[in-house]
Figure 1 (cartoon, one colour):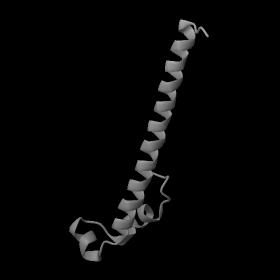
Figure 2 (cartoon, rainbow, N blue to C red):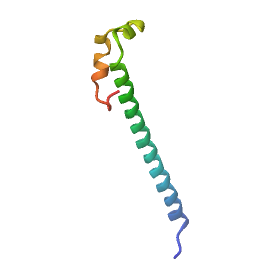
Figure 3 (spheres, rainbow, N blue to C red):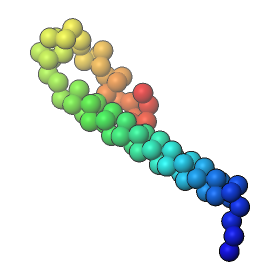
Figure 4 (cartoon, one colour):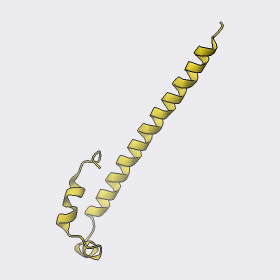
Length: 71
């Protein structure tokens, strides 16, 4: 079976697009996981920890209650 050069180039483009999509999905999942981890950690901070960085619980309450997909 013979393939044209155009068909071969299209295969490379398809593979590149697929890899780009996989990378984008992977990056998004990593970002979401990182947000969950950071927000859980922030929720565990004591009043003293918050005071040390100049914040109060009301300052971080909105951040801690956000769903993982929201920045």
